[in-house]
Amino acid sequence: MVTEQDIEGYLIRMGVSFDLVGKRTWMIRDSEDAVDNLVVTLNDPIIVFSVKLAVIPEGCDRLKLYEELLRLNAREMLHGAYGLEGNSILATDTLQAEHLDFNEFQASVDALNLCITSHYRHLQAYLRPPTRPRPA
Image 1 (tube, helix red, strand yellow):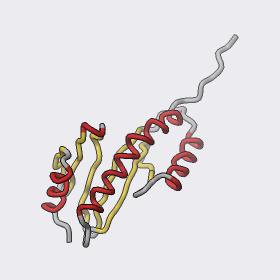
Image 2 (cartoon, one colour; image 1 turned 120 degrees about the vertical axis):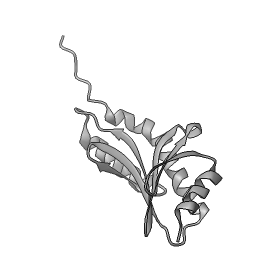
Image 3 (cartoon, one colour; image 1 turned 30 degrees about the horizontal axis):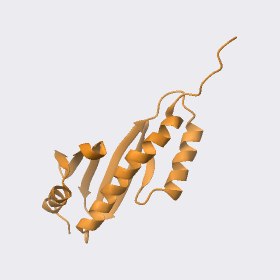
């Protein structure tokens, strides 16, 4: 079973900055990848990785946004999935804690970093309110 010390060791080995933000919960702060809110929680028997990608603004076309999130889930999410929590878009992944090794841990963090850095720019177009024609 992976322990708190194992997770901290994995984070140190990855060379990322992190803070202990709660019981068995760490926040990764990686300035190289512009990631500052990836949360790792050891919640036996699983480890949950999550990152808040964006707040959904009033007036955006939620149907188009949700359709695009589902498309990304189907074709581009290597680990985990997009989901909603309140009015926020989250990217999450879970792994079994029992036999977790460093490579699996790093793959989940790297996959979420990829979605943050590449998908966020793409999703910004769906987070804007539709433009309205100006009166003549």
